[in-house]
Image (cartoon, rainbow over all chains, first blue to last red; front, top):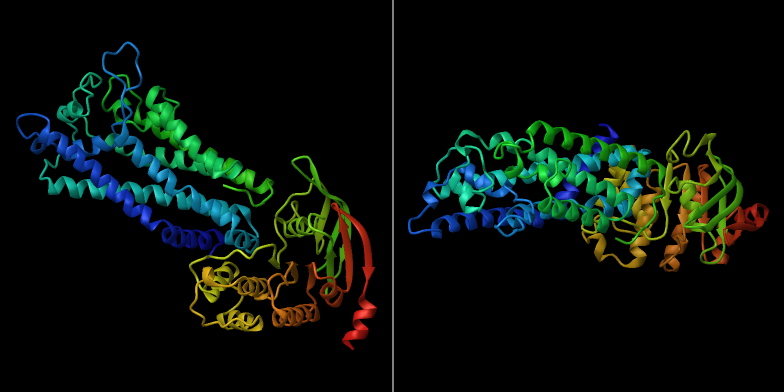
Length: 281
Length: 222
């Protein structure tokens, strides 16, 4: 077995041992967000609108994001909490393990392996596995909730969801003709890019600065709409799936892959040139 | 495995940590490093382990230059400052995980390494429940379990009781006898003089003195 594979298997095992409670919390958070959306629909008007929601609406609730700040708009700016919280939670789950490993037992293993790159690439692979697992957990929890709520199994987001999330002014295309899957496929790579960028900054500076960078990117993205901001690319409401002049899924995929590869390369290069010394977090 | 250090310099955040260090450490010898706190002993060990990159100068290990030909010494066991292990694993499990990277030793060798430092291989206590002395013993076991050709031990007698110090001396003598290059730093001057073939005295990052002890120690050993 290669050195990379040994590190990677160890990381999957040890990483899970150290973060399993956070994974459970994530599943609960996604369940709560789905329930909150359902409750809004059930209590929004005189009639129970929850029964009219589709599975696509539940996914839309998770990844919709929010409108950018617009001083001319009559609608007040609202931070998209249901989009913000799951991303911050995942960023936090992936924040500490690689750094603590490097400052602790991982250092001796890296020396034993004779390769800094093997250690680094395994950590990058671990992050990717975490992101994919997180997306799968969110997917499964949302599907299970939607099935319990006896929603329509269609993967099309409806105008009702946009209305409940107060996007009725922003959505200027016919939602019924767009399948949310076209946007969802860009999400994992975008989140991978975000978490790997955080990993690289954690290595170069400290985990605290890595997390501050992630929060800043997401926070700025909530206020400003720009195709170069990772956060904007992670918002369904700003994609061509829901907005006529939105960001295309090809662009989002391209940007995600570019930042992912750049983070992996720059982080690995930095590690091969830098001192490994204990630093406070 | 021979270690040659030539004109090594290291500065961190503008502070000179190592200054113009040149040393030669042949196989089968124990080289002692002595000096007060902050004299550069630990940093020198880190440099030889490949953990810090010199600003100038070279470290050659069996003719291979660190940071150019190799990233880390190919066969090294090290204990630098506090032993770092997985908190929620037993001593044996920690050694198994570390040994799985190279895969060159079997479980009986790991058990033997634990017994040599006075730890019970089947002890079910997790690392976080270990006393300081037990952690130090586990660190020495981890450093020596694969019988490395280069052994770097920074303050190995820290937190050890008198029995532990005796065990450490025995382990070091075995490593020396099989031809390993051993570099040891120790605050206890009497222990350092007893185990070393030569001692480099460090002060403020540079070599302040050198003492050859081989003849004295050989006489005592005989």
